[in-house]
Figure 1 (tube, rainbow, N blue to C red):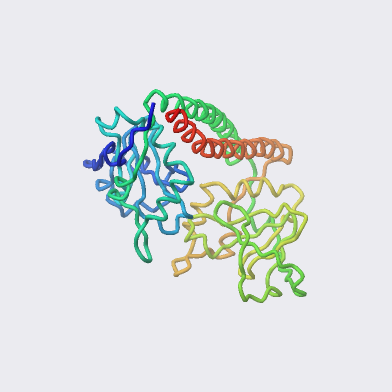
Figure 2: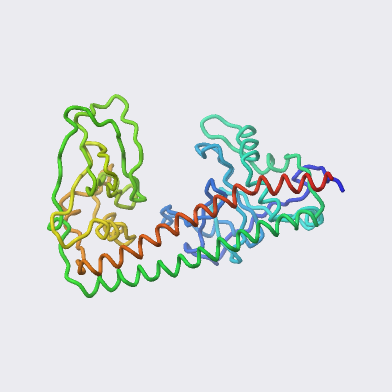
Length: 374
């Protein structure tokens, strides 16, 4: 057996099917990320004409031809969801042609795209200045060797088996999340409530001697992240100790979220003097529970709505402290936290499984090449 050599464009065809008549709404809009996955978009779609969006059917590929600021990754995904989705008209949609189906399986081709080697190839061959592109014509010009379909199927079966296991595990996560959501909903309607400002106290301890150099910011995923404070006077930065929260109220409107995080390390860190730092001052509220409540999408939407209308679109501290918090018993909080910790750990494992699947793609492609060459 041998590889069938040719240009990729010989086996694929461009698809441009618009969402005319608004057949699909905003719930079907997806973006494509650098891990080769379709994702729910966070973009504001209120002013977008969804009739111009493209339909991506099961078995079709979609990619973003802009490669700038993509972390040296090619953002391409394969729709194996079983449902039509829609994507921006800026994306490129294609599929294996009828002729191409004699030579290549869509899942095998997706594994081929999932290799760091292909990412490097795309970035090297992108063109442009401030914005770089890798277009449909560039993809068609790729030289590719194709093993016989029987060999491709053998390695695709291994890939699909791992994918099925990961998705089964992910479904279990949804069941746990439903449990957490049900408990939170119960607390929302059946427990006493208190204003956030009555539960916490602000901390304004500065790094006066400059002894702490571990500078962090807070992102909209409710996590601390390393930050570079080039040229900044670190003696003015605020110290965040274990059990304290740091929050960037200036970016609530921009992020449509409350960028807040709980410091769980014994080693103190510092954040920008513009951040709000606080800790819980009452004995009947657990920090982990408070973070869970402030991490809800409903809380993020409320905070966004209450943001001001200036350029920064930040949230006033006074309004932040007016957020209404249900306060269940400590036992109920502890029960919720235990389930949430399990959910968080399983989410991490699920992400590890996804990484393993991506990492095995180069191995499977290499194996199919070697078997075809004998």
